Length: 367
Image (cartoon, rainbow, N blue to C red; front, side, top):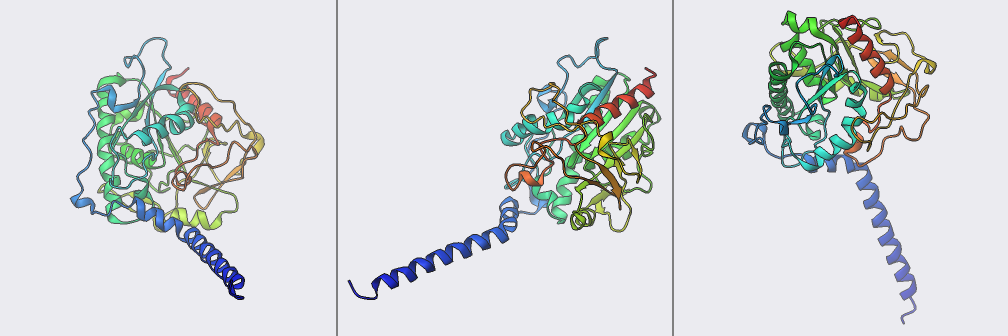
């Protein structure tokens, strides 16, 4: 063996380790860009052929619907029209097929129990499947992405009409939208509910969860006190100390204009409802008033999770809800890079929302 061979092998091994470490570091730094690129449909929306439209006369086009859609005497006093958050990552499609298997599993296992679950004891829940814009469309401000989100609204509006005409029968109702679903529900309020006196009179409340809405001239009056009916509760949250994240949230927020286009929030103030206090206010909500968070992921639909009370305090600052980090290990984000960018698999205000919605329905119905 040549006398320099061991040393050469050591240098070769060190070089290989160095290259591996460099590639690992570079991948970590650019992982977000790599994932975004992988989810990019890489074709303009204008030439994109979307999946087939849902038929809302068919039960298959509803992710959640009562077993007996016609109301009976034993039903809760109201209905809940629920617009789901994003469950579809993207890739080839700008908008998801309504029966995309992975997106459907995520809805049933995570989104429905955590975000529709608080309203099970408030009303009969109707949640349409819709051709939701992909997660990628929420991570970019490209015009294509905005068009994909505008396209999704058409499904939600048609589902709402079908619900009103076929299933509502003049009953009080609540609208709930989460994240992308909240943005779509905001336009539903502006175009369908606000101009219609009969619908406004029957709306107990609208909850737009993790949704940025302009504070000036919202589609319906904001909820300024507990038990107020016919009002809007909207908020987007960050954890305490994430000042840069709060500003980025507002900088990237898009809202509807009067022409039905998504435009930047820019310097407008955002509406901020505090779920612990049940009001749009800048007063701080201490943890002792927090009724309960829940991690309902994986629970059977309709099962009530164990509540974790006094987990967080919250305060509205600069149009964003600043929330302290929860104490329980079950209230931590988990999952893949894409999962980390969707709404989390737990609800910090589960019990607070349940109680809040019950009170607003009681105000509207008188019992």
